[in-house]
Amino acid sequence: MKAVILAGGRGSRLGEETKLRPKPMVEIGGMPILWHIMKIFDHFGFREFIICHGLQGYVIKEFFGNYSLHISDGVFRLGSGSYRPAQPPSEAWKVQVLDTGIDTMTGGRLKRIQRFLEDGDFCMTYGDGLANIDITKLIKFHKDQGTLATVTAVRPPARFGALSLNGDKVAAFEEHSVGESGWINGGFFILSPRVLDYIDGDDISWEVDPMARLVREGQLSAYRHEGFWMPMDTPRDKAKLESLWASGRAPWKVWP
Image (cartoon, rainbow, N blue to C red; front, side, top):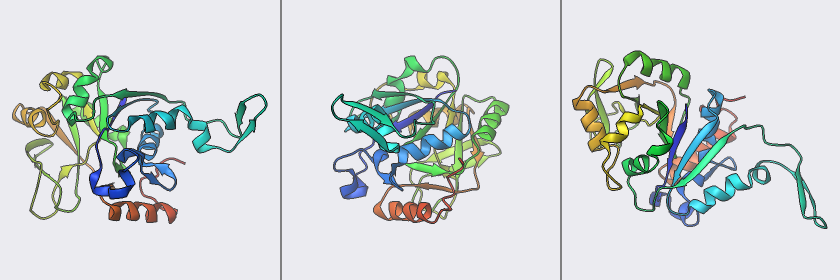
């Protein structure tokens, strides 16, 4: 199963952090949050990733193009122009970094990569959210439900949109909630390629018309995740995540 990560957001609320790099490349503990997300997937056996980039996508390409330089010490022989990493990367990843447009909405980014997703269900998440989610259990839940889509429902502060649940199905979805902490869209979707037919073009937000249609058709299930989940939307969020990582007890670090 492939993991698709939406990495095209501008991240304007992070201020100076995103002046010269896209939001998913903002670092936690010296590594991009995108890398942390991929390590979560890697722990559960994912080896193939599709990164949907937009503004400043070259920063993402540079990171993976020079991956060993970023993660390891190395020996440079200037005379011959050679480089040998002290420790080769342990990640056996295939990473497709695809330009999905600067102003394309979340649904439009998925639609643009449809030809790469026709071989079965895939996982999709956002490039700014971390969780200690058990993706193996998420996939099993999705298969047991038999719906076209499954969203991971989490309980963060009320400043996020809310999911109204009816059993294991989503009964309603509100992008912005003013109530107390309820179930909201936490990313980490499992999707059938058939949901891409619900997206008409670049200006479609996945979280609006496609999800609403899936709800109406009874095709959106909700996997309740009671554990850690946190997005990186503001400098305060970044500082909190940095503090957790520095403590040595980062909840999302499910890998050894």
